[in-house]
Amino acid sequence: MEENLLIEVLETFELSHPTRVVIAPLFMIPDGFQPQEWMVSVETPCKKRTRQICQLMRIRFRLKDGTHLYRLQINFPTATKETLPIGSKIFSNSELLLNLQVDPSRVIL
Image (cartoon, helix red, strand yellow):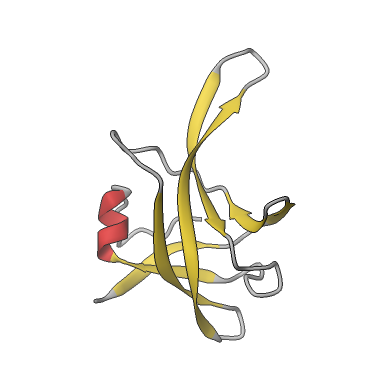
């Protein structure tokens, strides 16, 4: 199946418990979204390609004014900052992009 660019890594942070690399894109949450796990391709800036487990979760953020905002968080439970460096490109199949209601022709940064 053809893979398309899902996101380019511009910044990451690691959580120590549980250990995982987190990417927080500005994807809106589709109606009826449920947590998902996918295999994606990661292309590092030096053009090395690997496969990684990617978890998509709905995360609630509490804003200063007391309101809440929900966003999609992308976790890589087996990755580190070294294996998913800044500038890496994450590719996924069209099914994942359709589930997220993302236009596969658009690069999301």
